[in-house]
Length: 110
Length: 110
DNA sequence: CATAATGCATAGCATTTCTATGTATCGCAA
DNA sequence: TTGCGATACATAGAAATGCTATGCATTATG
Image 1 (cartoon, chains in turn red, brown, green, cyan):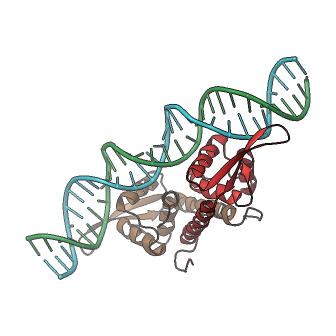
Image 2 (cartoon, helix red, strand yellow; image 1 turned 30 degrees about the horizontal axis):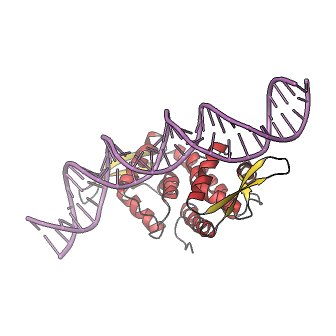
Image 3 (tube, rainbow over the protein chains, first blue to last red; image 1 turned 180 degrees about the horizontal axis):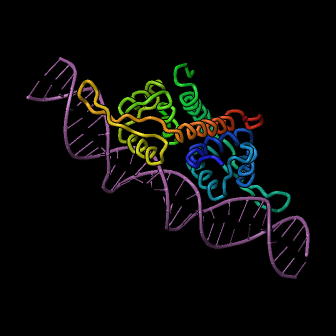
């Protein structure tokens, strides 16, 4: 399993990148993270929801309640424009750090 | 400048990767980070030393005092075997997150 | 001789993380 | 029909962490 500092640091960009592919809801996002990381990241719901709420408070994502055919209610989240921008910025920053860590810092990162 | 969660999460691997190229001391490490990141990461000494101490406490690096020709005393740090191992692990984990964030999680990360 | 740069160290405040807990519905098997 | 596991959202507050602010000391420079 991944180091927890990494999990924390990647939380927001990861959620944004999932929502960039279409709206989704809490439970499904947790499973998507597990799938994408090939079981190397495992989030609890208690870790996810606060991040979702924070992102919404910051205006990067928005939510709406949807009743599934099953009758169960789900809160679907989707990206807002500032969220797309934030995601792009996150990816750029990660690329820089990744380059510094792996490339020995002697090439251009652009 | 980079987001601070990222700076924090990359602290240990970054220091280890610098020391992997040879022993160094606090002040020089701070400058090396600045250089490598092309001024996009700027560490204060107050951020660095605690990390250095922590890494030493964990047995990943070791230190020795050296008197420079100038007469100034410097504490040189170098990698120990567990530190090399930790660095390799860090790099692996970063690669995974990087892949999940950029590659949409549909390819192999190995 | 004053200031900037070099050099190390740490207390403790501020912030953040995330565990533990609560609530509720649905599907299924015993 | 009842009990359990999976689904689904939410939050308080303990625990851990980051890093600013501060302290001290030496050397180079103007």
